[in-house]
Length: 276
Ligand SMILES: Nc1ncnc2c1ncn2[C@@H]1O[C@H](COP(=O)(O)OP(=O)(O)OP(=O)(O)O)[C@@H](O)[C@H]1O
Image 1 (cartoon, rainbow, N blue to C red):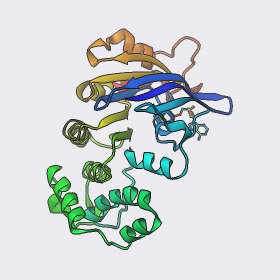
Image 2 (image 1 turned 120 degrees about the horizontal axis):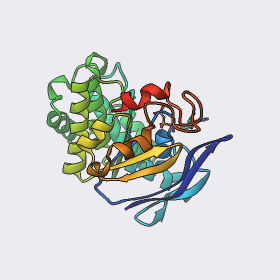
Image 3 (image 1 turned 45 degrees about the vertical axis):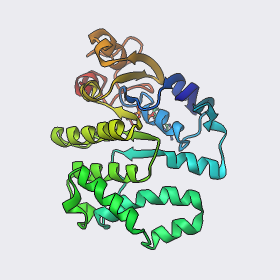
Image 4 (image 1 turned 60 degrees about the horizontal axis):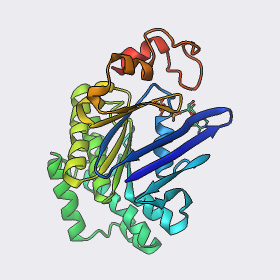
């Protein structure tokens, strides 16, 4: 169980995440939705401590993640694989090497020398075989020796998911993984995340602008608005009125003029429509 207790992050006068409390059982696939600026990225980044909370706690299986430092924090970060909108692969390296880089997160845990051995290309036959088998599972085995920059965005994101699995994490934190993809590639990536969730039993937290994708692929949807949880439930419970609570109406919400405030989308009038 991952527990967020009154998790808060302020940037100056902006409260990006405002006392969020959530309990996520192991193996759940959660879609976190909300307008641009609602606090989705900040929330996710506090879980692996890329962003430090201003207040509140993160607990995993009862252990206080917020209090970790040094080696224990590195180990926790290795338990949380992160997927980014821009893939964060090494474009000039081949696909297989990019996937093997997932092992470095585990090796860094074992100490600097083990990490260095990985950087020098000293991956064992077993690790290579595992990387290839992951690529095969996601339909990418034939591209294993191609430079990653020659692949489509959707293929690159699936390589990033293979790299994440190579890390043998307990959680996947995906921050807008499909924001820059066309619909077909977006679906392929969401399928891959669902497979990681179901076949590997991983907890997946996935930030999404598109409610339709969250509905289709996530068993639970958490809606954020101005850093607060305004919806938490299964897709079937997210009716039009509740969706409006998350995204606002076609017109700006009361007291929240279009294009201003921490939760403002590029244009509030278009944000709800774009998000659906
Ligand atoms: N490093 C930072 N410094 C200052 N303000 C920040 C920082 N990171 C986030 N914010 C602010 O916190 C609020 C929440 O941002 P966040 O990126 O978490 O939202 P989001 O829902 O992920 O939005 P998007 O979908 O556009 O990434 C915004 O007002 C943003 O400007």
